[in-house]
Length: 348
Image 1 (spheres, one colour):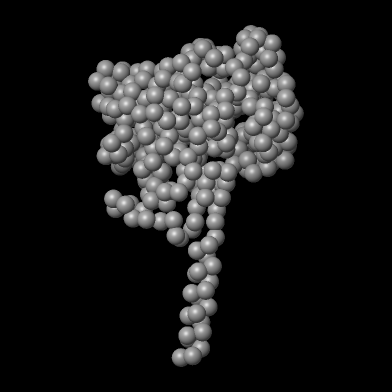
Image 2 (tube, rainbow, N blue to C red; image 1 turned 135 degrees about the vertical axis):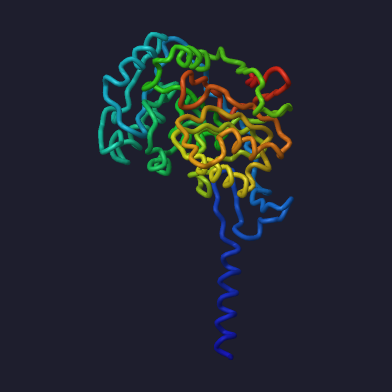
């Protein structure tokens, strides 16, 4: 009996020690057990999360600026991005190439160190005004903890990309720095995508509007626009690069997922408490999804958000389809959904 009591005391001491462990990044502090309360039948973990209030906007581009094509994910060939490079040059931009741009290591544009070093040099280069991804795929998560983003505090530059680049959007937006979710060098062939990306980079992009449809929810909200690829947002949960979406407006898109996986990812955002702090939702393209015996994409998404009492703009052409309209992530926006139109107005 005495021995059992000793074991019990040891267990209680270990549990007490666990309660004081923290996971932190620049904006987030979770206390593992004590920062949990029960509200409206959901556990909410994020009550003490610090909202990102900084809005650091990189300078808009002008003719003569230098931009870099970076390769953080899947490899590309020179011929695959030749058209994209030519388009950027036709805008009067000087295009530099990351040193690993044409490397190949399996699916990747070089090994982890080569990709990290190639990106870091372009971040560190004060003459580079924008970092334009070659393409997506997979790989940003492998290098993000090896990247020093602090030079962007004093010398912010635009990051442009989507899909796997959501890792970078999250890390940079969490620092209060704006980025652009938009077409990459690999897929600038669509005229609408590239023309609107040019407007965004050169500072001539203020609104995005669609006719209201049955999947929208009327209302008005203001907040930073954050988000991107839902699979990537889901994969960052619980890490130091977890997207801070407190009091923000959430944008989501995805491709090639089963519908039940879509539901699982949205449930993660719900059960983690994130959805109880967002002010609105913008739903982009969900392409090449597999329904099987599941509910439709529309049913799953609207069912997730319908009872939150926030506006939902459903069905903008941003994501893996064409056209791919750009979005300023990390920027304060006004979201208005009425009986006729759903509109994003970007703060000027």
